[in-house]
Length: 77
Image 1 (cartoon, rainbow, N blue to C red):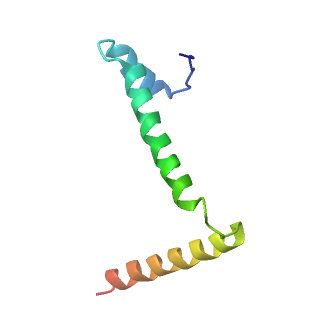
Image 2: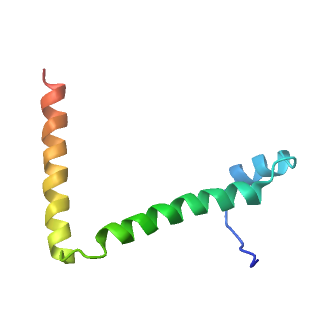
């Protein structure tokens, strides 16, 4: 199995060093697998999509505008 080196903030490194009983590499491996599975699912869902980057950006802006409007309306009640 290949090795990987990670850069972590000093605060996190202090916690890791303090708790040597934890298998930190296993925690990192599980977190990476979880993210990898999400990416694989996204790839499978979008595999046959005919949307281009411009289409995606337009949809993104519309969704964000709708969410902002919903948030503003909810806070003015």
